[in-house]
Length: 95
Image (cartoon, rainbow, N blue to C red; front, side):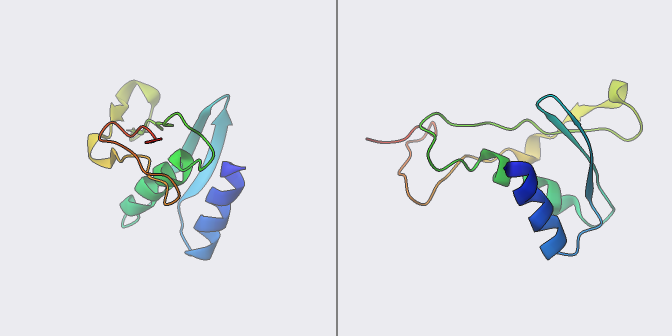
């Protein structure tokens, strides 16, 4: 379901960035210059699961040509926030 939501987001925003591969629980995207913001939004989409009481964390790594060059993208770390649930400082739902 999230893959469909990501595709709809990319299409609605006329993004060149495209999902090129899905391997088990890993999604691979081809990112274009000037669209660095798109990956942060994709991470946000993947982590936004309103009916989930456990925070979902999507890891983002970036590589230029091959997997041996991949690096974590720390500046894209966001917290899973759902407008319908109040969360504490660790991202856990407050009862």
